[in-house]
Image: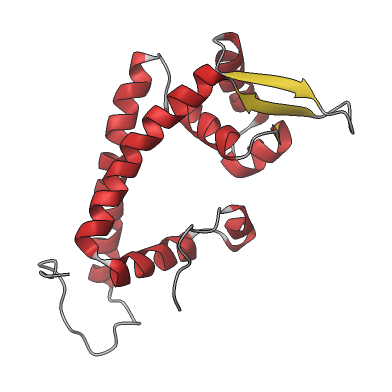
Length: 170
């Protein structure tokens, strides 16, 4: 990285963050999340959808054949909330459900071609934001960022994260 961010300073022990450093990190996360989701929100609004629809489409696309219970575990929302979202996605032709041959009680979900197109449209836009930030930060920062994000995830859910295509160097 050619330039350091203006707030980067040397401190005695960087592994013991001060309160103002933690608050700054929280502020960065808030603004980053706002900007990361902003364009996706605008696209989804054109389809009369919101973030819950986007999350469902994303994880169904990333885990084709995912069961309703598995999606509930990932999204950590109520069954009632998920049913509202899935009803819209199914009724409008973005998602199909099929009965699991091995367990007739399980419903497995897949994106339709229409669902894949929408998922890819939003993902391409969000990927461009991440790619730009990665290029600006450089490889070492990118790897550290991935480790920090992974560390923010509840330990019980870390196994759900898709491993990076490019392994993080340790």
